View 1 (cartoon, rainbow, N blue to C red):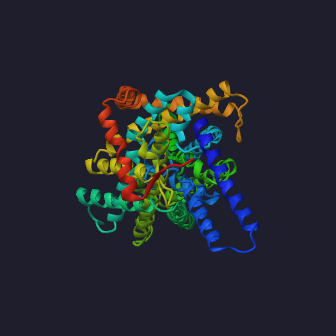
View 2: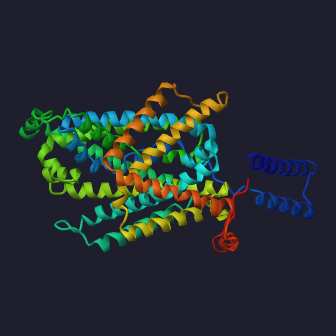
View 3: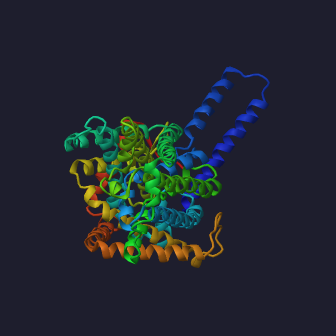
Length: 514
């Protein structure tokens, strides 16, 4: 770390000296002779060469909010209500579960913000764990993250967007699986291409895609409110609390599902190095985003059940589509288009953020050095993005992503627990370290107890998934020692390092300059 800081200081001093010498040169001569002009041009070339190839702080407050709203919960509000309703037993209790799940997630998010702002570097959870617990835990976490979070989430986002887009054509039957996969790959490649441009362009596109999610929710809420005075609406409201479950296990499972219905916010911590004024924009953006989403998601659930009875809702996973069919023949088309764009928005956030974790791992020697290469013009990590894209495409074509959903949820819960442990460890080891944002200790304590409880319940529910996750993560330990600690076989690593030279020539990429 100190070496990086020293390099940065030297570069800044060099640039400052060049600027001063140019200014004194201009002020010391009343007119420019031809030789003087040549010297100025030479200095301009030197200054241009010294420009840093680094991640730029271009994400504004509204960009932060757009990223969070798009990724928190993803498209779950259009699909997950059936699961939560089946566990809670009644529409009224389901709404309570959605509210509780949102409040729990925002509490955990604020705890992680404290850790994120202490480091304020690209890499998110991987970088926090690496800095707090050391190299081996950091690498093993990243190994599991790539397998259970990054590649599957890209595949799932592209697959969902493909499925909803094809539902406009195949209205009375399921589309062919091969066609769904082909469209999903095309969607993923298209979004990757967008993310190889300027971050300003990416965030502008993201704001539009996020607005599609809000528009979809607002349409559903308005239609539900309009339906309240009707006989159907009054009858559904009369039975709003019928069948409410009182079993602790069922309520816990409903809460567990609602809790994950507000997941996805950790991606913003990966982007703190590219965020303007993160000490202000990150906590404020989280609070505003969760306030909007908790309100709209609870209101959307209320709207669903003014039109649909409990029995009707339980018969379909695509609750939003069924809701539209009950109101007007064109509504399913409108909802399908908006949900498709929401899925693309979620995918865009993942492709925008998660390659920064590989980028940060390249800085620490946990990934090949060429992962730290950025495009000279766009300042975006092309090699890291292409690598994750390749993994995502393989997962889409293999069709294995849907079988990993339970394992993905379990690993996500373990990730939150590790981030809370980072907070406790830093409070203990570095009590006087600067903290731009600090939460009361009772908040992470309650969040930790809750996370452990949810993970424990998920293990009881799906013990095989726990064994699978533990086995795959444990494989990261020998991989660390062979590939990172010992770097065997050496010839393989030399050939991997040489890839950077070809990338520089072919794609105008450069290593990060500090």
